[in-house]
Length: 355
Ligand SMILES: Cc1ncc(COP(=O)(O)O)c(C=O)c1O
Image 1 (cartoon, rainbow, N blue to C red):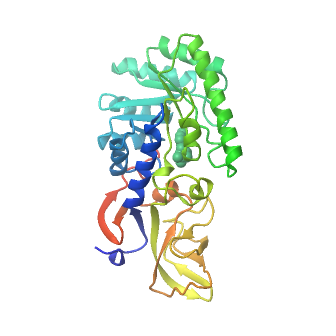
Image 2 (cartoon, rainbow, N blue to C red):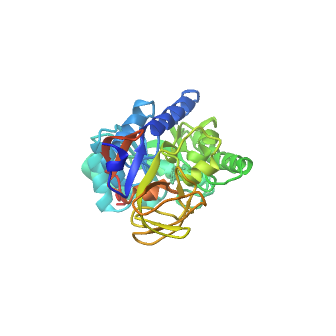
Image 3 (cartoon, helix red, strand yellow):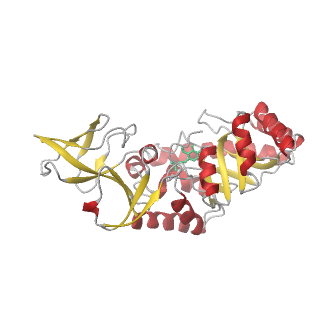
């Protein structure tokens, strides 16, 4: 099928660009001590994740248990849930996954360690855990190396399988100035390494030391002591990251195909709105022409056209999302393109798995 026969709005995945991104990241990590464990919160699709693993990734990272279930159902053998799994409803689901794949979950407080261990003992399956440390983002995570050491002792005492630590430098990944970004991310890794050193001194050497995002993959990826990097967005590169990491070897691989439904002067209206495209990271932009999506209502987009744009109702345009992860979450499938030809349709099975 040709692109012109696809109904709109549709999420188009440029296979060649994605393959390029996967190969470029694999090449980078082939030269590093650290491994890549790409974040599934971007593609949410097993067809993408299995290509990342085939290219050398050691498994995937997930934000949610529901995403991990999708990945394990799809045959991914090693999954890090870089987030807390709290409460018996979720812990039961986590325990159900344990015999099916190597699933590792982050912990950051005593109560959660105790409830995981208690459920684990009752089921005869002990969860594998890493300790989440706060490296400056101020979200989840232990706040000091002493707290990390104390939690690691408790993990062992309670019989959970202790695997290591993580520290995501999310407050650094989107800093536009390269020097500042590198400096801040290096500081964050100093914090993570202080936790690692304290663990080592207590005989609790972490096997896994996990960190990193697309904005900082090469800072964390080359940091001695980091064993794996959780970058996710690089696989499709969205508008914001393409700007922040214009120097990185990744290409935009995702666009929304949309139809112009009205034109009034410089203002064109397209059939894509906030139910199929997000704009919290700034205005999405045109792929072939440089128009800007100036505003969105539920099912309409206002396109702020360039003087050369001659779009009229019925014409089709492609728009690069400014933030892929949240846009993808609104869709059911990727229309997988090689050039202008539709070659496959992949289900976004991890979309809206926020539980
Ligand atoms: C825990 C964690 N790790 C890694 C990432 C990296 O993602 P990205 O590649 O989009 O920077 C994120 C992003 O939200 C995250 O929350």
